[in-house]
Amino acid sequence: MRSFFLLAALAGLFPVSASAADAGANFHLTGHPVGWFALALFVLAYLAVVLEERICIAKSKPVMLAAALIWGLIAWQARGEGTAAARGAFEAMFLEYAEIFFFLVVAMTYVTAMGERNVFEALRAQLTRRRLGYRALFWITGTIAFFLSPVLDNLTTALVMSAVVLAVGGGQRRFATLALINLVVAANAGGAWSAFGDITTLMVWQAHKAEFFDFFRLFPPALANWLVPAFAMHFALPEGSPEPAPGHAGVKPGGIGICLTFALTIAITVVGKQWLGMPAAYGMLAGLALLNLLASRIDLRQRRYALAQGIEEEPYSIFRIIANAEWDTLLFFYGVFGCVGGLAALGYLELASHALYGTLGPTYANTAMGVLSAVIDNIPIMYAVLQMNPPMDAAQWLLITLTAGVGGSLLSVGSAAGVALMGASDGRYTFMSHLRWSWAIALGYVASIALHLALNGA
Image (cartoon, rainbow, N blue to C red; front, side, top):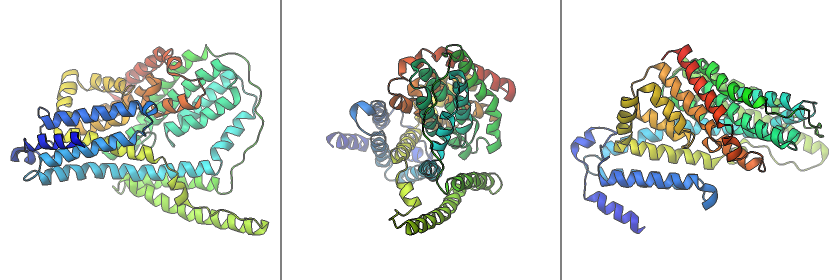
């Protein structure tokens, strides 16, 4: 608390001038004590996110606090003539977040609802019952991850398919390690060629930097990004096949209907965005209404079954499923948007844009940003680029979409999928095991960029 009052007192010594307020969202405070404090707050918050497991603090808490302090400093500095400009900058940032928030809430609700209806468990059971060799299982799980990630997300895809890998071949440590690395790369690459595949692609779509069908142009580069390291790992796989795992799991009533409704929701979202000019959240919320109607039918069917069996059945409610969404992740996104938006208002992103894109040029800058996403989460990377808004053509905006999406595969800590599998693999997938194959993943990264530039223009 004492440090906050110190920051506030120092901010009061340097009120924002009228010219800065007139500059809109850029107050040009990069060489100002307020700007220095804001940057320090962001760095400390991100360090807390990196050390989340060691300090036992959810990642949303430090970035939300940092966002509040950064915007508080901006508002304090802008009081008077610059108040309207500060408020307008915050409202613009919050509107961008709100559109992403409602999109993600609906998407997470659908994924959770499909999981509750045993859709993913049934997929796992189908694969585990077949006598597949280690190499066949490696390619099948990777292929499914590559094509499932564009519809779901890389985290959910990696977790679902890792359950298959560990259930079938978890006893063969070398196979499990290589298959899990393959899943991370495939899930990240798959999410890069769809507007729904990753938060970064969704952000680019929402910002009108690329249209829905433009992302399909990234399919060949994304495929190359996965196939190059997959072929390299193929020759290191053990021969033979695991014993088939026992057990059977079927889809609960209503599960197929939820999958079909999700497909219809995606169609409504695309039509609403492409032809009606509505935000993506419009179509997703329409789909949530359809899911609620379907949930009422599932609930009625369960009640009738429970009455016939003379048992007490818990009501089926979509609102209960929404409550189980990844709220820490959703609030983390707010903190990221708030922090990066605040740094943009202070002028740091304009400074970075001139230094990076003005010096290196868009191709090398976008490539470097992708490599940086292996260390820093791709969401603040992409939001920072969107806030910089460097002058780039459509091919370059697709390039940063590709590099930010697949660059996280270079390290196990570079993506949500990699971090999740490190915790779920019981030591079979680690930072060092992934690092041993980073050379092959880097070859795939370079190949994907080269193929994109060859196919889609420099």
